[in-house]
Structures are given as C-alpha cells and as structure tokens.
Length: 238
Image (cartoon, rainbow, N blue to C red):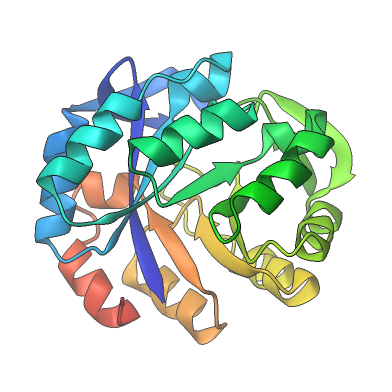
C-alpha cells in the first residue's frame, strides 16, 4: 500500500483544516521543509493540495511544487484549483506527477474527459463524499450524484486512480471510514487512495487488509500521533 503524506497549502503555509472548515485552521509552517521531512522519513509520494485554489478556483502553488522537486527526489500528486485544462497542464509542468480533479468533472465534464485523454495515467479522480454524495468546490457544495456513481463513471472513462475523502472524517483524527472506502474500491473497480481520518497504525492495517491501494496521511503525522517511518514499514510502501 502506498502512503501519501499530505501537504495542504493555504496562503503559502502548510496547514490542516478540521473537516474542511476554513475557519478551523492549524498552521504548521513552510511546505518545502515538510516535503523534505517526509521524504527523509522514506515517503516516495507527496499529496499536495492548494486549498486557496480549491476554495477560489485560482491556483497559486506551482512555484512551491517546482521548488520541492528541485530539492527532493519524490513524486507528487496534487489537487486544488484545477478547474481548466490549462491549470492541469501548468501543475504538471511545475513538477506534479499526477493531478487530482474533482470540481471540473462536475461542472465541465467535457473538459474532464479531454483531460483524461490528454494526460493519460496522470489524472486522479477526486471523489469527496459528504453523506454519500459527491462534493465539490473545496467541499462547499454537494452535487446530486452519489459518490459511487461518480466513481463508476470515472472507471468507464479509463481512469485508474481515485482519491476518496470522507469529509466528515478529515482532520478529525477519528479514524478512517474503512467500510465506505472498501465499498468504493469494490463497486467502482478504481484503485482507491483513502483520505480523511487516517490516524493510527490500526487504520493503516485495516485499509491494507481490505486491499486498498493507498492512503493519505495528514494531521496525525503533523501532530506526532502517527510515526511516518513506522507507517511506511507497515504499509510496505514502494
């Protein structure tokens, strides 16, 4: 199982939000320093999110990604603010290896389809789920389509990976929603990256036992509740 230490960037700082609430922010510092820290612990991937872009649609972290790639030999999966083809291209040109797309899929499906064609194997479907429904625009809006139905649609578009986030779990350190994550992978056929609430070795072990492809680690590694090196050893990250 692949583990993705998260670096969420808001106004140039590495932060964590509580359940996606912009008013409940914990600031940690320089995102580049955290990239170096997580790479030194053995991570092979980072999950980098432009929160400003997610909320406003205006991306601004490309320079940060470029700086990280200059300093650290690591692969990057990145989302937030990628609403147009040009945004995706710019993020990938900055050094991201994969782009996570959610809002574009809901509001501009033709562009989403074009992106999957233009950037094969580089598009990760961002499936943010709130009460079982697909949520967009930094989790501020919920669509009328179920998260699983959207996942099936992505699989039919030959997308391979999906980042599945249970919004009610994100940043809460209450444990991952193992059953919903497993159901998403089983019913859609996508390789699912679990996000939201992964806060213990127990969570990682449970996800691994269910055959989940990957997991994003956030607040738990920032607050020291989970040791990244130990987690990577358990997951047999490659």
